[in-house]
Image 1 (tube, helix red, strand yellow):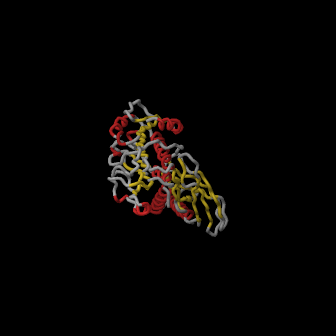
Image 2 (cartoon, one colour):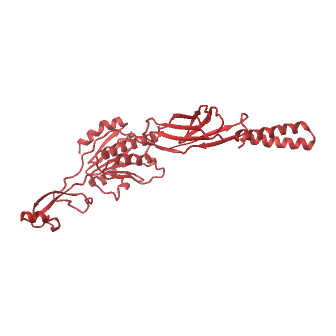
Image 3 (cartoon, helix red, strand yellow):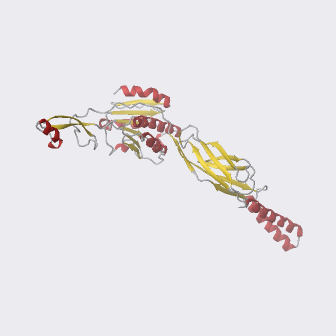
Length: 378
């Protein structure tokens, strides 16, 4: 299609040709005809479509923020003509990446690699490859796309952290309340029946064999849940980079618990992010969900509002910046075995409520150093 310069040239040439022809001046008419011919020639110049087959790879498809990732393009010349060096651009999020395709014979194949931007966390769309063909005068320009787009996941950075000690002693006769998670009562041993035992726990085969009424002794095998809460209100953070560090901190805590096969619950002030029950793939699930977490520009819910309706128990780790939200943690302190506040690059010295442990985090190295100390105290 014609560029703005081409459109202006074509319109001016048409007017010049018409005026010259109407007034009987051959020179302006000749100039107008030359301009129109140049515009038509520019369109013909950009008309041929290079026949290229493009297959795209991303290696690896999931990386931590700041780690290297490359895009790999396998390009095949499916046309009859020999293709000289072509200049193309590949899309990598909002950043175009220049790609130089070398000369290819008919049926020739080339592999081109280039680095992808991983400085910012998120889902980065990669592709399609855009080939721009323009005439030497810049009057026409045609863009053609090749290849199927792919997605690069730039996930939070993490550091290895241990599991915070938490949990209360469980009754050896089984769950002591209806709030115990379903399916956590596990057979432990047999014992003799005593008055008051439920008949549904009687083990009839053992009773018949021993001649004594025997009942099953159950234990509550439920594991304490680690709840990680991130303040994602845009107004609560002075700099977007501070929020990126906060997500890294939250991911490190959640992944540490998940890799220990403990249940993990990740919340933001705006709502739930992830919930796992303790399994081999939980860490990957948590990282994928936190990849999509973004600042909420209109967020008006506090960190304690996000905890309403969420079961208590286990450890609660709150990731904030300033201490204005810490005072509200006193209202939920009794619901959890342990409450920890991680203040990311704080700008104030707000007091910490009784029963709440706190640590200031200037970077992931500081988190690694402070975490074992938090695990010792209560």
